Length: 325
View 1 (cartoon, rainbow, N blue to C red):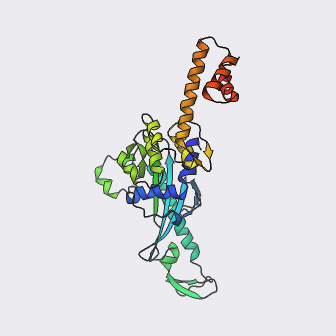
View 2 (view 1 turned 180 degrees about the vertical axis):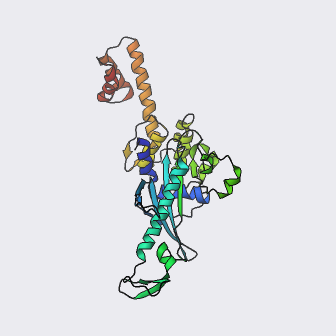
View 3 (view 1 turned 90 degrees about the horizontal axis):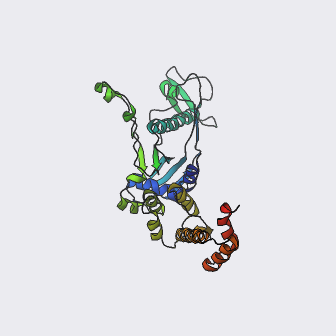
């Protein structure tokens, strides 16, 4: 796992940021998904593909996976939300995400199958099987088709929605659906091909006005990532001296390639202070270079810089160290 992937998982795996991303994707920023209603799921997905007589397991690891459990109008909502985090374009992403989702559905079918237990091998007839509770009480009779399927006619799957969160500086130029990956010479077969489309948040393609649809600092962070090549410093200054989540700060530094030092104080990070420290460092480095050109000794440089910029001797020595013989 690369450094960007690790920082993205650490930050976007938090419930508030995760909910914010999906509220933007699914509900145009409306606060429908409450972070408190998100529960962690195991990102390691091991499945025996449904109907695979060879019993060859498939194991895949999602970046992030949570289940949304909520009540709406008195009705329970259960939706599995997965996120794949990309710093670079993945040209086979429709296949990758599609496999994740189908493994997820396959797991649900297998779990359902395991819940259908017979007390013994006897069946009430050739057409039905008996489903018993743990205490041996007969609960329901299954048709042979239902028992074979491990899925009753009225059973339903929990929906799975996977989002691709792409933080690359350029627009996503890869396929956004399975059909886009196919070489289809005979257009008459298209109606018979099953498609799989990506649900993608491509930072470079978000309109500037739409970053306000995010409810957390995630919107400001992603806007800085989008404009990292031209307006990053200006946008960081707009954050003011409000402290942000350290995980958001470290993610921002990596995703936007910021040349700043992150310092955590009282549980937060002041990005403006980080920027000011970089400006100060650049001034000091410029002063050091000027004094070197004038023939000043290292001892004179250290003394002058400490007095002028109110920094420690050790700090200046650290800047000089690469140039000392």
